[in-house]
Image 1: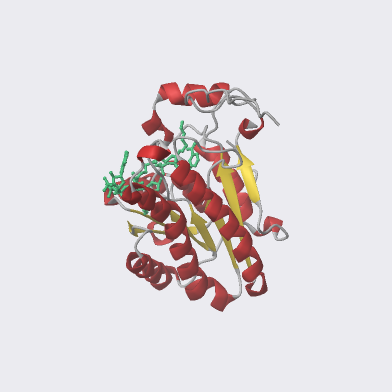
Image 2 (image 1 turned 45 degrees about the vertical axis):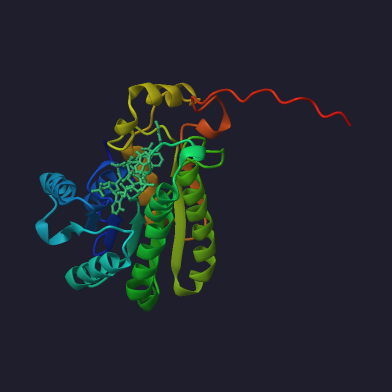
Amino acid sequence: MQSMFAAGLFAHQVALVTGGGSGIGLATARELTALGASVAICGRKMEKIEAGLAALAADGVPSERLFGGTCDIREPDQVAAFVGQVIERFGRIDVLVNNAGGQFPSPAETLSPRGWEAVIRNNLNGTFFMTREVATRAMIPAKRGRIVNVTAMVVRGFPGMSHTGAARAGVENLTRSLAIEWAAHGIRVNAVAPGNNIRSSGTAQYGEELLEVTRKATPLKRLGTPEEVARVIVFLSSTQNDFVTGAVWGIDGGQPLWGELWPIPEPEPQPEAKG
Ligand SMILES: CCCCC/C=C/C(=O)SCCNC(=O)CCNC(=O)[C@H](O)C(C)(C)COP(=O)(O)OP(=O)(O)OC[C@H]1O[C@@H](n2cnc3c(N)ncnc32)[C@H](O)[C@@H]1OP(=O)(O)O
Ligand SMILES: NC(=O)C1=CN([C@@H]2O[C@H](COP(=O)(O)OP(=O)(O)OC[C@H]3O[C@@H](n4cnc5c(N)ncnc54)[C@H](OP(=O)(O)O)[C@@H]3O)[C@@H](O)[C@H]2O)C=CC1
């Protein structure tokens, strides 16, 4: 497909995409490299990173513009080490896409403390650790930077995944706080919220039946693609919208507006109040 972005828009710029070995992260890395960026990707599993790097190389991206390695964003030491490697390799970081994340479905009443914590760490803590590391070591000293956080559609409740709903809502507020704190450093901080209706390596884990439920609850009556999410991430990562900061952009086919989204038991009717 023809790109809506000008060729070379990201030439001489460096982007770090967490979870860039698969799905939305990889689609973002592909778009950024096609526009001239050097890109670093990370994830917990080396085989996913290798597959991502191979896909980028197959697109024709020269190896000197690519870097990848393992980094669990929940671990501050690993985050510091990876960011250090990226700076050593490319000398700068202009764009950070906090895309890594995920959870597991569980009713709130059976969620163990460790299960709750695992998902908060994966989505809220990890995003904060990576963001602060990149900002303090690369963006604040350079007085420029663009950060895009990938959250989820949390304007409605997230029954069955309350831990991730809380974590993603936390990331949305973090986005707003940092947009203000770091405006003076020339850093813009925005977020995208994919609907729970993007067909990707991630949602494949939830099965076709659940995907069909979310498709039906989407006014546009189809699923979105990682590339459709990636294009909005890339726009927010670019210098073409320098007056946008602290925003959360939904990419969801109108899903928050309408429809029964989650196949949980219908709540029991409650007795009317007497007075
Ligand atoms: C159509 C539906 C759309 C939904 C919209 C969302 C889409 C996406 O997000 S796409 C991305 C999809 N990928 C994932 O969601 C997978 C990501 N998940 C993980 O990577 C992991 O599950 C984890 C990081 C969230 C947790 O892993 P980890 O920290 O390694 O967990 P532990 O094995 O150490 O266990 C800690 C704690 O959590 C409990 N737990 C773990 N998995 C489950 C589970 N599937 N169900 C219930 N509980 C689970 C585990 O039992 C531990 O607690 P304790 O037993 O009390 O020790
Ligand atoms: N697809 C959708 O409909 C929706 C997606 N999202 C969010 O969008 C983002 C991308 O999802 P998608 O592409 O669909 O799914 P994927 O599962 O393909 O992407 C998640 C990526 O994050 C990496 N990752 C997960 N946890 C960590 C961690 N602790 N440290 C480092 N890397 C990690 C994974 O690699 P590895 O396993 O090797 O660590 C993987 O590459 C995720 O945050 C997801 O929750 C939100 C709402 C809806």
